Length: 343
Image (cartoon, rainbow, N blue to C red; front, side):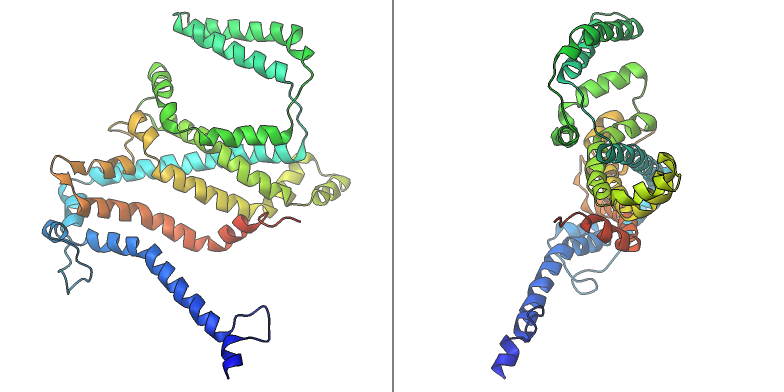
């Protein structure tokens, strides 16, 4: 009897005792993970006095649920108070995620199927010319002339000096450099971006925020999709080439259908990053393009943090993402696990 409880004849299955222990630990972990969401939901239905008077856990026993916060956010403050930031967040996040996915997937496919050997001399020449253009712009030279001067200098330097350096980078070096850009905190580049957008008239403009989000999330898309494309056998594409398909036909009819799980998983991850982004939105948006994270932080006003209002807004932000994750769970699980184990 004891052997049946503590041991199992099948080495790939847990014994009843360890199975019970596993479920206990899983239940504890599920409680720890889901309790913040539960606390968020019940706080959205509390009165301010219930929030301020201490922790109350169980509705109808510890406190009486109320729609006070919902009425204040959705009715009393006007229809545009939440609707405009919400629609702005949806539009900016979806367009940013789609743009980053399209550009990043193309770049990732190129890094897995083509060999690049850029010379270090050309790279440093280009960096130097970019610095020259910035310096000329700072010296009050029109940016059109500065750009033309920089391009001309780059052509001359690249032909004369840049090609003499034999050292070159490979695809792995390029991929590592791309993902290293994600390590840079956004706050370190926000001032140059703000000044640039001020000159271009892109402040408080959805297009400017979409461009920033695309640039910030491109390294993640390239890194994820690069691993996914590497898991697709090259022989499938070679068979399509033998049958007379072009590179673009092979990409459209062979590679992309096989990449749907990876594309969906990457899209949802990038969408969450764009949906919750705060720092760039804080500096680059205004009344017309305010996003939901900015509206949530605005509830910490002169009266102190209004947790009940914050909970309502956060619920409105979280629910669509949870529904998308549930509906696309099959694709997400497959997309994230491909390439996790490599022989």
